[in-house]
Length: 212
Image (cartoon, rainbow, N blue to C red; front, side, top):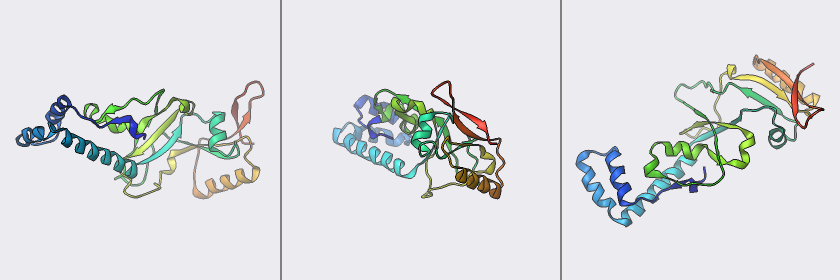
């Protein structure tokens, strides 16, 4: 959510187009347009819009997933050097509260920061901000579940049906596997797969095998 992804400046031509499409009563549009002719007013408006985006960054919630469970770098970076656990979820999180709705979408990876104009980009500006990431992270094949207003909540419950797979790392201890398996059983989770990752002896990759 890099702020440089958004250009908050506005020229007079953009002002005319924005006023035309804005949710403002027709009787007020001419008055508002006259204000936008003033560069200082446009500067104040840019500051207000920037504060709006800052508020969005504070209020939204993002849960990050990967489309791959067998990416060695992911296991190294996020699973304590292959000693942790990878949980496979249904990509559309089902949560218990009907008032909460997630936007679920793959991340867009880019080589450079291109600022999108706030007024020209329209409603897509928020999605552009939330889903744009540096190309150096492309190996993650990230998908984000986003909630625009989390209403101060930090965690959200998900339906048990969402958890579909469990993968243990190459170095996950027997003790940790037993602890997780016990917890899954106690909580009543029924998964499609419970496997352990092992090193593929013919390549530099890892692959899953069924738990013995």
